[in-house]
Image 1 (cartoon, rainbow, N blue to C red):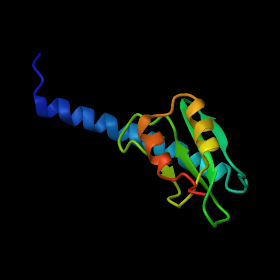
Image 2: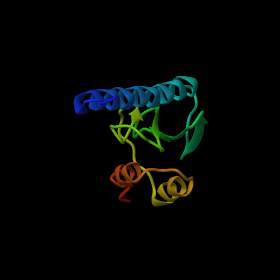
Image 3: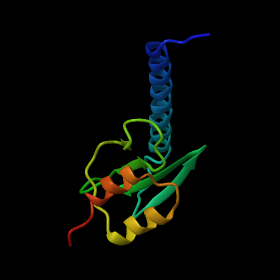
Image 4: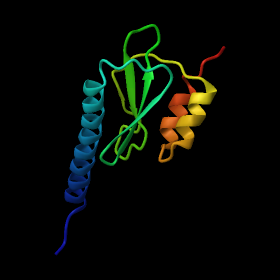
Length: 115
């Protein structure tokens, strides 16, 4: 049985899109469950196979949730999209938590507190 290249591409694109939707869904579930929780520095959560970190948004009374072990594009997922800063200590905690993608670490490094 021969399968054409476009057909393979369509199947892989569909699989990747489904995976991305599942990843965003996990973030949305955690965000809704934890909406009333005030995170002081960092909070780690697991939902099935997903590892998620929560941080306090800058100057807001809200949290941001970031998927650490992203497998499908885009390779950085955060809900909601709000600004935040983190200390080097918190970044090290996240790095040492295991299963953190290089892309997520690179993005988190751009949020390091300069003070």
